[in-house]
Picture 1 (cartoon, each protein chain N blue to C red):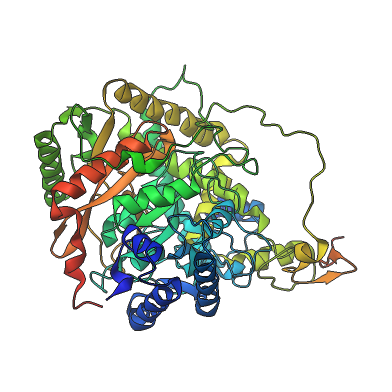
Picture 2: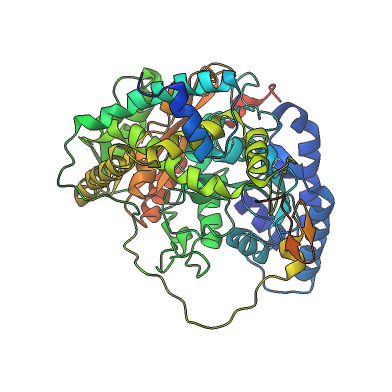
Length: 94
Length: 488
């Protein structure tokens, strides 16, 4: 076992997920099985290989520094679960 | 006249000659939806009234003699991860159950501009993560050829809708096979274009370096017509390729003389249903008879594609899906403080597989594991891409099965994530390399369609259409639809 229930708890916290005890067991098991399979990658030597994050030979895609019309505020807020005075409203932060 | 059964190009000519109106045609397809949808369940949302209204507008424009695109008046549908202004777009997730986009995706804009009629939004695996549609947060779509079999995924609804004639064509998205595998399972044509050929603006992101939108159609000619509308550079997508787009109908020629086609041996080995391998050999023999040259080639890093893909895709997903926090849109589960609100919202809103991939991706990117998993996977991606670069020095395109098996039964793989992932073993390397892949129906096994996949050079879609078209003209194996009679 590479990953323990404790690791799963830590990762869940990083990912902002709340897991039940049963979920924790389940994910520990399935993530271990998947990671074991991923270990296959260690069979190949990639010492001198450059990583590919992206297949297109594009770099620094800029547009002209001109003003564009932006979306109307009402539209931006239209899907908000809660809003007040033209802002998204959230519960207490501190 | 059963209008709903026809292809877009057949209907286009009927519409242009004014032998039928778009309203008549749209009614015919909506009636078809009413008749079979209870069995197939391909749609999350049907926009019947709006579709008819749109159709009437197109008919009026035509009556006034306005210039019309070839697809004007044709009813289509879109996978529910493509933004449609004013029409709910859910990604088949509870976390977006009520999301109404305030804008159109670029492909939506282009299709509406071309005068196509939006019938509704198609079911999918939640956030495009899955290979069977069993991960839909709402209900699974069924395969129109056998209701006890899955339609494939993640664009299962989009593929089933075309197969069942519930839409003339649909758009899907493909991150690791999500257009091609369901196209194969449902017996329709599905194309994943070259990465960057079709704008991703307004496509709800799963794995941004792999996602690509593409058409699911009844034949190759329709595929070319839809690609003509949706391909092209878009300043709103910074990963959009700044290249010229040809008229893809130019490639619809019944001629493959002199084409060199490689058959990668790694795609023909263990795990591939021998009856599918036999069809593939039959397709190769047909192409040779028509003047192409087929021979075996090797893509030595193929077996590493699947593990590399699941690390890269999950890593990108964990980052892309961080935005679902109950603040700006979608579900919110109330809690005392903001962190608890995030956690409760995400835990109740996301389904099991989505959470698994977020967990896997978060782990692979977390401190101490980044080099071992994520960076390693990106390096392996380079090797996989080089395999393709190397093969394309010699071959015009490659031929493989689309999926190792035909459509499997519901429940068969749902409890074993790795077995489910293996269903995409033939399609995943293509996304990692960023090249185009086309799935073409080719025969059936026990009544279920088989798909063969042609893989092209970057921006080599034309060659794929040409090969597909030639096969369509010269063998009926590319039309498995008759099998469906009596099922729906």
